[in-house]
View 1: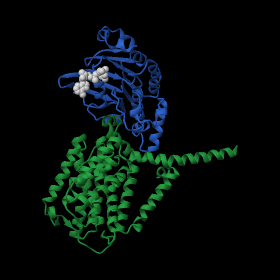
View 2: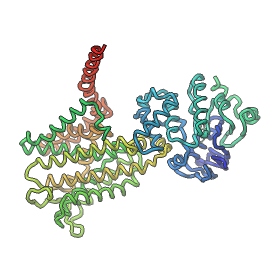
View 3: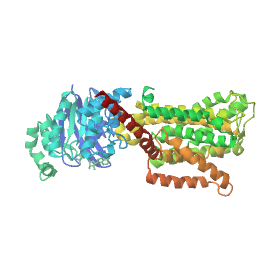
View 4: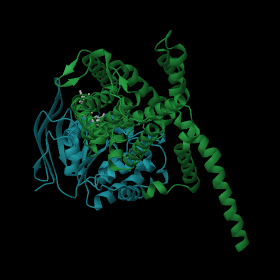
Amino acid sequence: MSLLEVTKVTKKFSGLVAVNEFSMTVEAGQIVGVIGPNGAGKTTLFNCIAGAFPPTSGSIIFNGQEVAGKKPYEICQFGITRTFQVVKPFASKSVLYNTMVGAFAQTQHLHEAEHIAIEVLQFLGLDHKKDIVSKSLTLPERKRLELARALATKPKLLLLDEVMAGLRPVEVTEMLPIIRKINETGVTIVIVEHIMQAIMNLSEKIYVVNFGKKIAEGDPDTVVADEEVIKAYLGDEYVVTQH
Amino acid sequence: MKQLLDQKPIVLLLSALLLGGLFILPLVITSPALMQIIILIVLYAYLTSTWNFVGGFAGVLPLGHSAFIGIGAYTSTVLMQTFGLSPWFGMIIGGLLAAMVGAAIGLPTLKLRGAYFALATIAIGEGMRVLFENVKQVGPFKINGPSGISLKLVESSFMDFQFDSKAPYYYIILIMLLLVLLLTYFMMNSKVGYYLAAGGEEPEAAEALGIKVARYKLIAMVISCFLAALGGTFYAQLMLYFYPKSILGLDLSFEIAFIALIGGRGTILGPVLGALLLRPVSELTRIYLGASLPGLHLIIFGLVLIMVMRYYPAGIVEPIRNLINKYIIEPFNKEKKSAEGSEADKAD
Ligand SMILES: Nc1ncnc2c1ncn2[C@@H]1O[C@H](COP(=O)(O)OP(=O)(O)OP(=O)(O)O)[C@@H](O)[C@H]1O
Ligand SMILES: [Mg+2]
């Protein structure tokens, strides 16, 4: 049984079909990439899986259980945690406080939550910022805080929505081993990213979306050689973001 | 508890002195009129602290809290007048009733954002006042419409919650305030507090981290309404007379919100500092200008709010905390460090 089975998920916004009969399977332990041009429907797909809104139709089975249409907090309790592309820190609170909110998914006790949070922050190299109010962080740091908070809930499946956007190439190179290390601790990851270098490097399998539809899937090398994929991306922002 | 005592010794010492001072205050102040003003400061600090559970932590602005204070006052009073039940029991019953009403109101309204929640609570608070003004009697209970209720006078006794002197009232409300501040402290340092703050600030992110935001807001609302109603009973016993406008109107709801915003919502000491600053203003305008310019105190509050928000958007608790840090805690730490330093020198 796969960890996540998305079958023919469709999401319509008053006429606009943002996700169109999209299917994918994620096996436990994998890192799976989802790519596609701006507005392709990647974030909408994450929103459906994470319960931000219900899919218009289709099924999402996680760990053998139907989760389509469940509330975000229920989905998190099942073991799926997502990060937000447009970061949403608890702005007036410190980095540690933010991360502890995530950690409370695992414990009732303040001290344990603090302990878990500090460990996560150390793991992500953010512990020296723990007392900083999160609204004074730089964007890359906020992205990392998104990751810290999500990780502190101890998810089985982590949905990462452009956590590397805005990072300098050096910083991207630093993030790659971190994400791989998270994966090695037993967390399955689905990652949306525009930075090809990162996606190619990390993913075992890649799904390509355009206009809400899946146009290709497979291992990284097959996918980038795919004609339709090249067509979808020709002259598009990939060239720009590759530095 | 350990955490609470885990403060710097100077902070503990000062707190102890302050507490001691508060407890001997009635021995020093002999004027009942002055005592009454002080009691009202403590009462408003208490009421605002109960408001704080929702208004300070759940990310919404309740503007109808007088509804719950009124429920408390009316419940304990009619039970006492009709059945001779001790106001202490009536207080608990009023609290439970207010908690239930609060839950019923909170369920639909807490989902509303920003101004919508504020407006809904104004409507409910005012609706409650109009309702009570139009009811003379409910079953055996005399409500008396707009003219309100005068409490039967009895001999000074604890069980009857009536006293000849002001001191017992002062001690009762002081202890109620300290307990509520303690509860606030424990809540802020618990999972519930973290979840409430998270849900209040970024509900979407909070839900994604497994928090059923609506449930935590409802918990805060129920606690807040229960405690606010206890304050209502206290008000009734202190004044021995109240009517819908005095205890259910927007005036009271707004004054509480002003105290919270100016003092610093979502902090432990904000409501206390706000009450210390605004209550005297409110008393003075009422004494000297109440007849000619009623409502003037609200205008003054508005101006103070504008000033405070301009320079200290988090409330006056912010500069005061900085002052305490700068003039009390830091110098003390320095002294301690230099003392340690000289000891280290000797060891060399
Ligand atoms: N809540 C919403 N209401 C209406 N339309 C929406 C909503 N969310 C997304 N859309 C639309 O759905 C389409 C897909 O958007 P989505 O954010 O999923 O794209 P994306 O692949 O994540 O793009 P990007 O790479 O820019 O992040 C877009 O046309 C977008 O405008
Ligand atoms: Mg997106």
